[in-house]
Length: 200
Image (cartoon, rainbow, N blue to C red; front, side):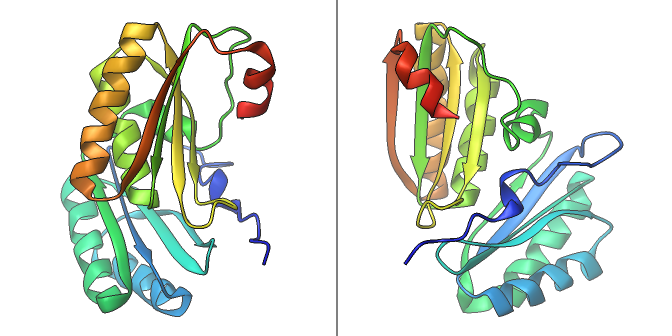
């Protein structure tokens, strides 16, 4: 069965105002419970709903932004409401601005010294891994793909010099592994031009 292509790919499209200081979210195995948990998050704290969408295969993801304490309170409420349908959750204080930009994959250089890939079993692990990667080394996040026609998986694409990409991938993998849902990583020096045109 083909999975739909949800709009979560760019949760910040059309958003105005400064980027949130903290990013939080939940991922549930039930769409109905996910919607209920999202409502609980918004009622529990002063946060902005950045995304709330069904994702493949029949899960639900909600992302919120705001002050750190407010995001933490919202995610706790979402976790409680999700109960046994909770797949994963995240809170990132001082989220890196590139993380928010990478959801829309709006920048892509013509040539790349190296490409790094993080693949995870959950949206939360990819977001946490991407944030850790870009904070660890001088790299650029190309895209964070959030379970869009991926069978519930997610991945991070990043670029930079080879050594920086290796360091970033190691840091991102460690963070995703700590989250508990790392699937795999790759570092590709001097990627072929034909590959670049297909990445994003």
